[in-house]
Each structure stands twice: as structure tokens, then as C-alpha cells.
Image 1 (tube, rainbow, N blue to C red):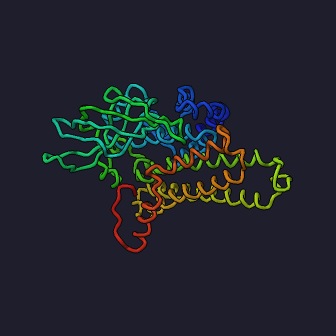
Image 2: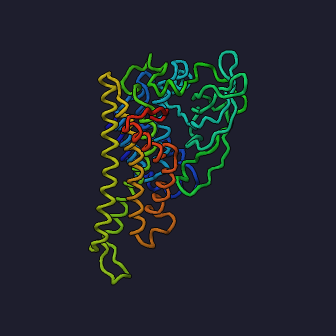
Image 3: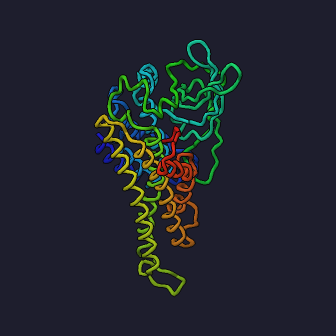
Length: 388
């Protein structure tokens, strides 16, 4: 199914590319595009088989994300985020999965993981209140995975959890007005004293230990991989894809361009332009190759049923954030050497440049934090962080 999804998505790319300017201008991915991605099977790639999913090799999913992002960064970002949530939902209790997919396996789930919600223990579960920002594509989803702190008797936080809430328990406030990834419509989610049953919760500590109640029914290797590898790779995969697509647009546009300044001549014959293209291409290739290598190794460990070593988990995070750094360097080279034409709003190079830089500020791309964890472990010091 994974190869079929990739081929189906490639057939959609011209129409997605054609909608990219309006997606950026209107601040949302059209419902038509989401419907096409649903029909292509994008959102079922990491979904459990027992709910009609493919349980694909995760590398295939990231390939699809990169392809979509290459023609529209916002659409690729939403596909990545909404597409990775079925994997996480597969870790929740069976009853929670039934709530979401029991009636419709194509039901989509949004997220906002920051632990800004207050979870007050009540009989059978928790009372939840809070406001969450940056929920990409939330208007297309019927459920949301959101972060919260359990508040003890003295009003102090005692645990950090991710909880699952239905659309009927929250409202969306449209606040998204930004310079990049404009079409993701990453608006705010607001919950006021909603009841969350115990089975729709999962402790972040348990998730970091590669444990989840959903593993009782979803026994495949996909659900024994680290959140900090699977989710962060989806985020960076969209950024890498946007830059890779920008590179293709750049080469096509600049191949026959004739300069009107600097003595004229064909741009392609300028040695400095040739070097710039080589540098950008190398950075993009390095980003993709390292990330795919690490995902393959992590997944193979899960397939073999052996422990995923901390060294590998840290390396995956190291290379994931470095991938973001690498492709930002690449797109900055392209943007600079494209000349004044790259400043015109709406052209693919300008839009991809904005989208890539916007995606780089996501917490998953906190470069210094991830690199420091890797270096700390290399020096033999203990590393304790849920994002590995």
C-alpha cells in the first residue's frame, strides 16, 4: 500500500501545486485537498491495520510527506502532522481508538502538545481546561491530542499527560496570521471544564519508555518506536521536502536565465552559481540520507524485537535537527542567488523560503537542545528527556 500511496500522491501534485498560492493567501489547506489525501491513503499509512490502516514502513510515510511539501509547504506540513497522529493514537487504549475510528476509519486527529492544560482528577478521569496554540490543520479534524498537567491537591503539577478530546469538547479560535506556513491554519484550541475519561489519557513518561496500552492490540513493530523519533521526523520531513521542491523549482527557473547585470551572460554558466547549486544539493541529500538511515535502523530494531539503544535514539534526534539546519542553509543559498526575482510574493522560491524558516522554529527543531543531549551522552553523562 505504501508504494500505491506514493504513486497516488504524485498524481495529485499538479493540482496541489496549482492550489499552493491560494492556500498561502487564504491561510488554510482547501477541504478538497484534504479529501484527495484521504482518498490517496496518506492518513492511513501509520494507522493500525485493525482500523483499516497500512502500518507502513515509516520511511515510506516520510517520502510521501516530502513529495507533498515539495509543491506546497503548508499542505505537506498538515499532511505530516495529521498523518503522524494515527500512529500515536495506536498507542492509546483500545477504547480510545474505538471512539475515534469505530464509526469512520478516516476520522482525523489534530494536536497541540504543550502542557498548558490543567487536569484535575475526578471520578473516572479528569476535568480539563486550557488554551492550546499552534494546532495545525485542526479545522479538518474531529478529535485532538493535547497536553496537560495533572494538578494535585495542593495545586501543584504532579504529572504530564497527553489526552484525547472530541471536537464537541473544544472550540477553535482563528488566530493564525503569520509569514510562513500560512496555509496550515495552526489555530488555538480552547477547552472549558471538559470531562476526559481515564482511558483517553496517556502519561508522557510511559510513552518515552516506549510503552502504551494500545500495544496490547497493535502488536506490530511500528508501535514500538519512540515518539521523539516518529513525530519529530514528520516535522522535519515537511521542511526538508519544501526545500527539496524549492531546489527543483530553482534549477528549472535558472537554467535558461540570462543576467541583465554583472556583465550579462547565462546564469548557468557562472561558476559561482554552479558552486551554489552543488552546495545546496549536497545539504539536501545529506539531510534526507541521514534521516532515512536512522529511521530504517530504529524500525529494524522494532521489527527484530530488540531494544532500541539510546545511542541510536540520540543519533536520530541529532540528525533530525541537523537536517533542518542543513536545508535552511541550502534554501538561503538558493534564495540569495536567485536575485531580486525571489523577492516577489507568490513565486515558489519565496514561498518555500518562508515555509522552511517558519517550520524551523517548531520545538521539534530545537537544535541546541537536541545536540546538547547527544554531546552529553557522548561524554558519558546521563540524559533524561522525553524528547528522545
